[in-house]
Length: 73
Image 1 (cartoon, rainbow, N blue to C red):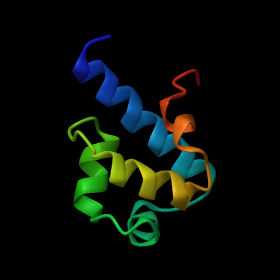
Image 2: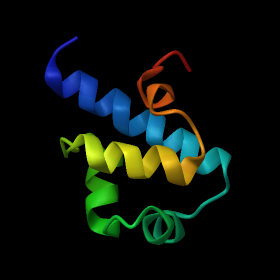
Image 3: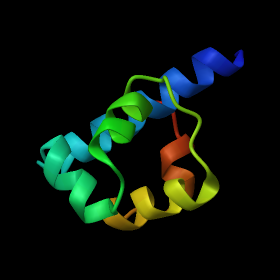
């Protein structure tokens, strides 16, 4: 898997977990303290998040950070 494919899978996983919690993107951006436009880029595989952003996302989703990398959907 190349970097582009990895980022797309990561973004898709974040979107799925967010939708499973029934959070609209704007509400989730607020809860996770991440700008909505950046969250959109992240979910579309267009951003390479820092580990701090990934921790914020995992915390807001109430999942272990390793769950973000479980691409088996």
